[in-house]
Image (cartoon, rainbow, N blue to C red; front, side, top):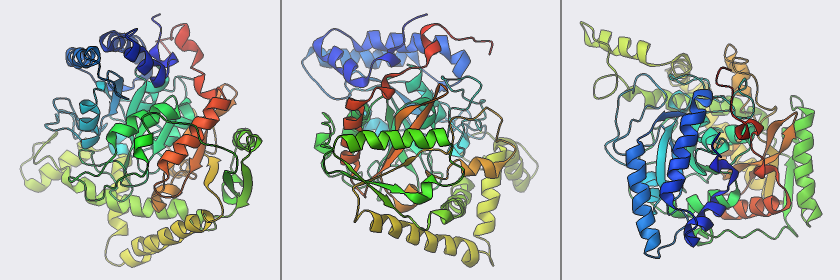
Length: 495
């Protein structure tokens, strides 16, 4: 079996490109070979254009040969299939947009292309980013590289698996309620959900507009920071976009000084329902920081118990609004019928999967006359209280440490018949989007051979410091260096 580049971090690859020991074209060829070899097992990719990838790599090599250097120049990347990249499909993991081809670039994709990054593929995802497991794609479930019988997490399943499996050292997903952090935790990858507005949403298919953010993923915090460094900055095409303080320090990330760092442990995240092994790994990670001079303080986020209800009321309400554009009139699949109503209902019935339909119906109900005040308006008030909890906590601590998920990756099919059980998998990841805070998942260790992620949360616009803390942690540990063992001995494609 060909060696996978997943064994190398983005920083090592960048060093090889800068020294001339590697070329972007050779890297892209290895990536495409890995993809072709492993994809029958993982189902992480929806489309690719090898000729175009190699042309982009050739252009990157020319820039390198002229002496140009950059954090992402020549680096192969994978894009979630809700991001527009001119000329390739934007399926959103759905039948209803199957065949739709992007005619413009998302701002984050454009900035990566300008920096010389080389997209090699579009990644599978839960349909319209609605899912926590990677099972809700119209193109079939993505599988976890650490155990093919288990979910990789969602909705950015293909993007995270692409990094874990060695398709590319960097990938872009999106995160609305945990969609890069959950799969990163399940697959031993580092992934960031930035402060809301730090990355432009122009060219990203909207799910829940007040919650959606683009999320970069790599093996390490330094790799995530390299990609983030070329994508940040206000975008006139996205009125919610903001500038990130200290963004100039991302390209060559330095580890934070851990001495004096105040780490908060919210008691509400360590109660019933948390796997004791997961709890132990999070506590060990915090002790590692403590041994380097950090102080640990138990804190309370008292409105955490309202988070799941609040998130899903707001999220489904925004989903029902955003999904109304997918009707078969202007683009995507269309079911023919004798009447307009018949065409619209037939298109949506055939085009949307069960989870998308469920959320559209829930959201329409929340916004309907007689229920708006009782449900949606109440959720907005609860969101304010959850945000205030974090504001109060960050007067006492610099970062907050929590689990990413209550358990390790669960078996495929285990929760698909119980939507509430699936939604509860998001219990630790939905609070931060409600408060618009930066947060990330970092590899924390293993339980019975399966990865466990540790979530770190920071105050608004502290993204750079958050990455510096994780970079320091990754200088002290080697969890992030571990790769799925069967990648080095081949994969059973008949699994």
